[in-house]
Length: 514
Ligand code: HXC
Image 1: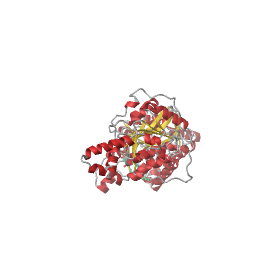
Image 2: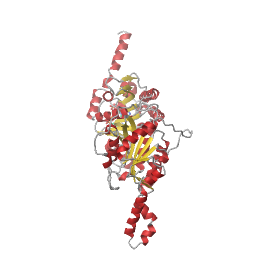
Image 3: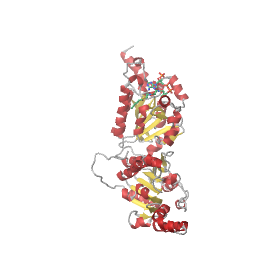
Image 4: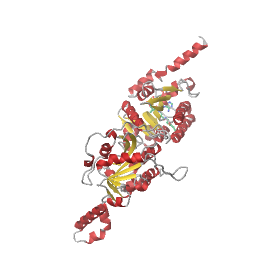
C-alpha cells in the first residue's frame, strides 16, 4: 500500500470514531439512560454547526498497559458550534472511552477550547461525564485539573461558563463546575461528590447511595451546587438553549435584544398582593405581570426558595430579577438565600444585565442555627454584591421592607438608581408588633389591660411608620407608584440608565465576605 493510501486510511479511521469506546461501551452508556458525547453535542447545537478539533490528539501514557490502549479523541470531544445562531465553544467528555477519565492530553484539549472561548469572547459549555483523574496518569491528571481550574477562574466574569453534569463528576473534578456560572443536572444521571460512597463507608461507616449523596435532586434542593434540574437530557438541553438566549456572549457585550412583547393577560397586578399584610403570595406572579410575554426564566428554582432570581425581558432587553418570596419563610434573607442572590447579582453585574429587585421581606431570619451558620457573613454578601454592582439597578418595594432587609434589598443607600414603592409599602426599622413591644414595653406592662394597650400602640406605630411616605419625604425612594404603573416605570428607568457611568475607587479587587 502506498504511503499516501496509508495516510488516507489513517485519516478515514480517525474520522470514523463516532463509536467512541466501541459498541459494548456504548450499549452500557445507553443502558444507563445516557446519550453518547457526540449525540449530546448534536442535540444541543444548531444542526450542522458543530466543528470538531483535536481529534488526532493522543495520550502519551506508557504505564499500566496504557501504551497499548487506543483512546479515541482521548475521551473528550471539543469544538465550536452555535446555539440559535449564538457561537459557543464546547467540550463533552466521552464516558465510553476509559470512563471519560481525565489524563494530561484530555485536559490539554479542554484547556485549549477554554482559551479559545476567552479569546473569541463566546460562552463555554462543558459536558461532564467522567470517572475523574485518569488513575494511570498519576500526577499528570492532577496537573490537568489544576490547569482547568485556573482557566475557569480567569474566565470568570469574562465569558459565561456553563457546566452540564451528565454522569459521574467525582473527586476534585467537581471544582471545575463549581467555579462556573451555571450548573445543569439531570434526574438519575448526574452524580457529583468529593468522596464517593465507598470512601464514606470506609471512613465513616455510613451506607449511602450515590443518588442520595450527590444526585440531581440533592444538588438542586439541598446543596445549591446546581442551578437547573431536568427530567431528561433533552429537557436539559432545552434549558441551556433558553439560558443562552438571555445572556450576552461576553462581558463586553449586552445580551441580544428580543422584539418587545407585553405581559400576557392574567390576574390584574393590583390584586396579587393580599390586603392582609401577613398573608403570603407568589412574587413570581408580580414578575410575570410586568415582564415581556410573562416569561420568567428562574434560576436555582428549587433551592433557597425564599428568594427568587432569574432572567426576564423588559421591552425586549434582558434583565436580572431578584425578588423576596413571601410564600417561603415570609421571604426572609438567610444563609442560603443570601448566597443565591449575591452570586446572581454578581453575574448580572459582570455581564451588563440591569438588575430589577422586588422587595417584600420582614428582614433576616432570626435564630441560633442561622447565627451559628454565619448569617452575618453570608448576609453581608448581598450588601457587597449590590453595592459593588454598577449596572442599572431598579428597586420596587411591594410591601414589607424592614430593618436590614430594607437596606440589603438594593436600597438607594446601596446605590440603586431608582427606588419605587407601591402605596402598600411598609418601610420601617422593624414590624409594628416588635417595635411596639420594645419602645412601649414599660407603658404596656404598667397598663391595667396590657393587651389593649399593646394593640393600641401597634396601631399607632403602623399608622405612623408602616407606609412609604416617610421614606418618600426623605428622598430615600423616588416615587410612590400604582401597581399598574410598575412595568412602565421599570422600562423607563432602564432606558434612561442605559448609559450610566459610575466610578469606583481604584483597586486590584475587593475582598467580598466569601
Ligand atoms: C481510569 C477509569 C477511571 C479513572 C473509570 N475508569 N474511572 N480509568 N481512571 N478515574 C474506567 C474503568 O476502568 C472502566 O474501564 C471504564 O472507565 C468504565 O468504568 P466502570 O467502573 O466500569 O463504570 P461504572 O460502573 O459506571 O462506574 C463509574 C465510576 C467508577 C463510579 C465513575 O468507574 C469509579 O468509581 N471510578 C473511579 C472514580 C475515582 O475514584 N476517580 C478518581 C477520583 S480522584 P474498562 O476498561 O474496564 O471499560 C480525582 C482527583 C482529582 O479525580 C483531583 C483534582 C483536584
